[in-house]
Image 1 (tube, rainbow, N blue to C red):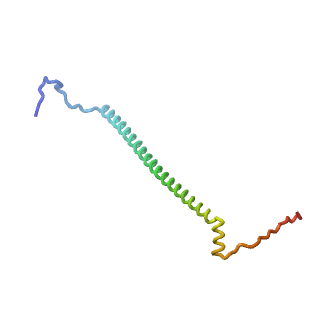
Image 2 (image 1 turned 180 degrees about the vertical axis):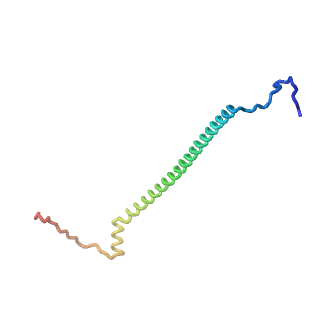
Image 3 (image 1 turned 120 degrees about the vertical axis):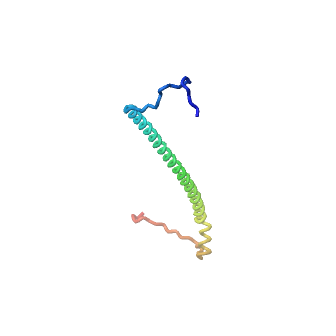
Length: 120
């Protein structure tokens, strides 16, 4: 093991470990509690930030899913409108009425005028 001789740089004779006094210990404890408080406060805000970021990301994903659902429903709605237009076409109604229901077109149509009860 190497030892230092008196006269080397940085050597002070009689220098030993000092025991902190009550005031120094109290000040040290106060500083440590301040440092720990700051560390815990930073950790708390970091956790809150991470939690809010996670929630924002989750809401973003759910919003995208809802948009996809809306687009699919709009496509389905358009398909149903086309189907309704096909079913309401006069040609289809005529064909169904004559072939499936056995109806025939009348030879003549009579219209009757309707008068109001006031005598007009």
